[in-house]
Amino acid sequence: MAADHNNDHRVGFRPVRDEVDETLSIEGDFPQWLSGTLLRNGPGTWHAGRQPLNHWFDGFAMLRRFRIDGGDGEVAYRNRFLDSGAYTYAREHGELGYREFATDPPTGPLGRLGRLRRLRSPNFTDNACVDVCRVGDRYLATTESPLVTEIDPRSLESGRRFEFGGFADTYTVHPHYDFDRGELVGYGTSFGGSESGYTLYSIPDGTEDVSVIGEVESDPPGYVHSFALTPNYIVLAEPPFVPSRRRLLTGSSVIDGYEWQPERGSRFHVVDRESGDVLARHRVAPFFCFHHINAFEREREGGGDSDDGVGGQGEIVLDLAAFEDASVTEALSLRRLVSAEPSPPAAELRRYCLPAPGSSRRGVESETLYPGHVELPAIDYANRNTHDYRYAYGVSNRERPPESFQNQLVKVDVRERDAVTWDESYAYPGEPVFVPAPDRGDDADGRNEDDGVILSVTLDAGAERSFLLVLDAATFQERARAWCPHPIPFGFHGQFYADGEERPTRSMA
Ligand SMILES: [Fe+2]
Image 1: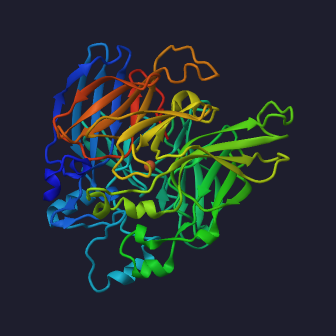
Image 2: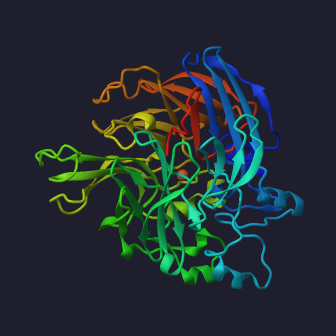
Image 3: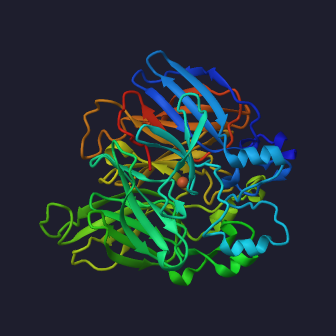
């Protein structure tokens, strides 16, 4: 393949053939306090035997594990393909057996008839390639289909299927963990008829019991990839990217069945976490979003004297990575990405301010906090999620608009509207994960909020190897890197599990 001879982002779309388990060579010094496991997920190959897959999101899941022992200055790396039914079928039959995000199995003459039913009763894939999640004592590889798989966080061996919920057709891969209440909060989406919409759920610490918080009706529901959580509210930002009956008949995959209907606008559904009631719906100009960054409640300056952030002039502040439209889903197809200049659309860091329920304020305001590009965002999740905050991190691009695949990391000061970046020739960084330094004396003004490190699995396309990059989050300067034996294909999400953490916390939604 011609792409194999290019020392650019295309190295990150090569399949991995080897599963390794080794100690990495290190440059620089890992912080002594940094001890834990970074578990990440993403594709390992985009081939089902002879059949090439169409999209970045279609690849077969390969788990990556970085065991970091800062005290001993050691980092061990291991990778392993998820032993899914979809992957097994592809190896045994040389073609796809289950529907992925943008690739369907080869179909016979009756194939199109099946498409009518497929959003309700599809042969969903169990190729859980998007993220990892801890529920109780179990670690799961997750995807938006209900078929998630338990994994061993040490060996990365696949375990049994884990039935998630059972009350919806798809589930978010970005549940929130509420550190104050000690519970996981998420939602599932149902397609069709009277049940069409979103079901909100929570899983309290110490259980695997999924309890339903409430329902949000929407017909048809939009493609909602993540959501916003505040102490009192759940907010779903629903883009006008919806399943279309017409396109389901003519399309060829899940995502081809969706249609951008800008006249519908984007909607915010505001739900009370206690009662599960939908308290408000707001309609704004259309935008598309994969990832929320943070959300919180506050009393607007000059507003009333409520001390719980609501009532009077209270508002819900909601930050997200906003695209103009849903064309990014097509732009992340392999046909586009495996070209010299893929030029994907940019997302900006945008803030929406919604009137809090009961507030005398009216209307939704928005502003650009950072013009972009910013994606795969992260914050000091453990200390700032659902609270006012100062720093957001993400992958970004040196050029504006982007001409290449993500080629820098950015740190945005959302209060000062300022940004600093990290980049290096031939380097293509993955999602940044923030790990707070211990005992840092947290401070509400955000002075210590960036006391910690950023971990990012970064491809060096020149060296044709990936490395685990450690940035000092305060200075955004490199502190260390640990070299992997091979280039790791571009992945999506992961979680850092600090040693000694007993709760099933997350380092990001
Ligand atoms: Fe995501």
